[in-house]
Image 1 (cartoon, rainbow, N blue to C red):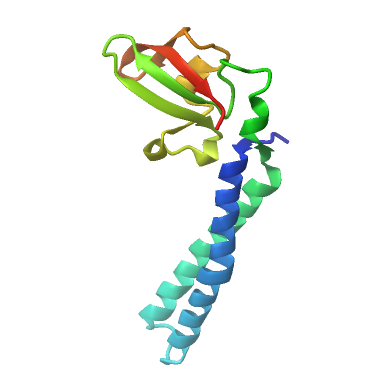
Image 2: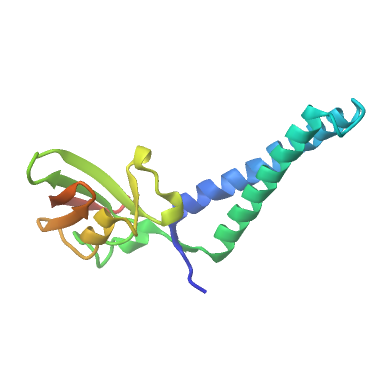
Length: 160
């Protein structure tokens, strides 16, 4: 069985979501189903069918999160710092400068499940992360992106 890597912070967020779904959302849906049943005929009861559909989505997400958490390999990012100073590895936060435009961006390399570009977290399987892994501060990484080839200089590597 392949164990997908996830940062300890990402695992904690998933655990919080799972707890919320089980302790807040699930009872709310059960109550909505109960209230809808009181309105009579279930065949033509839109509230009942909507609540049942919502229950299905919620239970599906609970199962998905439980599956992810049970098979994930949780990695503590801070523990990776020793021996990897200046080198890009899973969990590292990397500051990059586009060689052509001199635009500076900062990404953290995380597991596929916790990747979120809005939070500047990129998946370890993404083209950018694959080009960066193993490189060190000062190196130039060539990324094969859909828009063409881009080069990034690694300005700084942090483990936060």
